Image 1 (tube, rainbow, N blue to C red):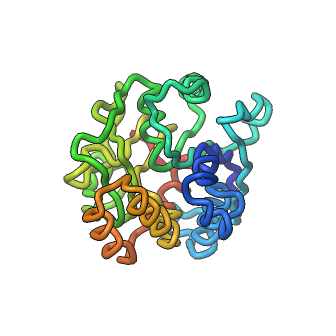
Image 2 (image 1 turned 90 degrees about the vertical axis):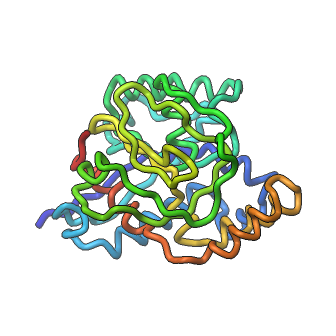
Length: 268
C-alpha cells in the first residue's frame, strides 16, 4: 500500500488575537494556532489506520504557515504544490471592515473559482460563507461554547458515508451563519446554532467545531476564564461551559473526515 503525505497551507488569522487576549496560551503553543493544528494533525495521523481514512495510509501532514493578516499568501506556484488550505479560528468577525478581511474574502473567491480545497474551523465557515454570498451576523441565540453535540444533516451523513447521527466537539463562537452561500449544504446543527459547518462541491468543507481545543481542553478553559474575568460572556454560561469542558469529544473523527476531504474522497 502506498503512503500519502498531505501538504497543507495553514492560514493563521487568530494568533495575533491571543497576544492581547490570552497570552498564557502562547507559553504552551508559541506559534499559536499553527502549533495547535500541527500537533493535532500529527497526533491524529499517527493513530489513524487506513480503514479510517478511506483505505489510504497517511504517512504525515506537512503544514506550511501563512498569515493573511499580514497579506502573506501562497504564490500561484506554491498553490500547485498544496493539497489544500486550513483556515484557523479568529476573534474577528467575518463582517468586519478590516482591510485584511476584505483581502481574504477576495482570495477565497479566487480559490473557489480554481476549486482549491478549503477547510478550517470556527471562523472558517463564517468567512468563507461571507466571501461566497452567504450572510454572517451575531449569533441570534447568543454565544455558544464548550462541548456540544452536532446533529449531522442527512446530506452530511451521505457526504461522509456514515450512519452516525451526531458527534461531540468543542465550539466557541459569538457569530453565526444565518444564510449559506448558493449551492452550500449544511453539515449539521446543535439546536442552538443553525449551521455548524457546511460543504460545497468537492472543494469546501468547513467546521464550526474546534478539534484543536477538543484535543487540549486547557486552551478553551484559559479563554473562558478570561471572558468571565473581563465580563465578555455571562458568568452563568461560562460556569456551565467549564463543567462540560472535559467531556469526551469526537475530535479524532472530525479530523479524519478533514483528512479524507483533502485526499479527495468527498463531494456533494
